[in-house]
Length: 253
Ligand SMILES: Nc1ncnc2c1ncn2[C@@H]1O[C@H](COP(=O)(O)OP(=O)(O)OP(=O)(O)O)[C@@H](O)[C@H]1O
Ligand SMILES: [Mg+2]
Image (tube, rainbow, N blue to C red; front, side, top):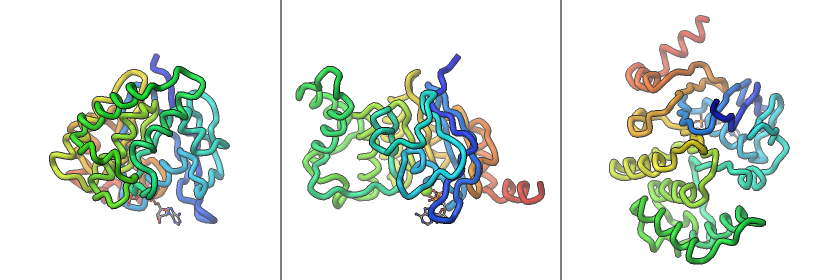
């Protein structure tokens, strides 16, 4: 049987006094790819940030189990060291820290206590990822996301994932704002990471990237809850009809 990597149980998340995630159950097994869709403001990014332990988002009820253990009380760094990764919808700039240094530090933290990462091995990892994503190697010397275009920021999120090799990879709208070639390159980059050890959760508004990725499960979130689940055909249905029929169904139920 596939190993359960993530199990979200009756999760409620608030920002200040406002409850945004209102009871979510979701399980993600190793080796699977999930798409999370839903109208603007339905809580997709909030869920992803809460999963990573962003301090602004308070879990008010329920639990998050990762590899069978509750991570609700762990900070973002600890979750990251356990193998969780979030590609942000709005990646932040880190002026003063070069991409190469940022990645080296993140990778060294992961290797702590294990075999040391040689400079040659690090360089090869970076070079391979840069080549795969058809990025300009000059990006490694630039400050993280500083002055990057929208599409360049998204590419850098995937570069981080390729280098860090997380076990649970959550990607928040990594396909938005990409040109047609970049979309294909990014999709190929994500596909290259598929494997029996890893799970990928892609938050997206568009069917297009799903044509490349073929998710195992599509979840639809509306107003802080997952209201529908299905296969890739569900994304096609939404693309064709929009969210209105689904929302109408919910109101009438
Ligand atoms: N820090 C915050 N302070 C106040 N409200 C917030 C905060 N974070 C999220 N919200 C609110 O929670 C709701 C869900 O936001 P979220 O960003 O999770 O939506 P989303 O599904 O990712 O939308 P989109 O598709 O537009 O990215 C929105 O109404 C948003 O304004
Ligand atoms: Mg969002």
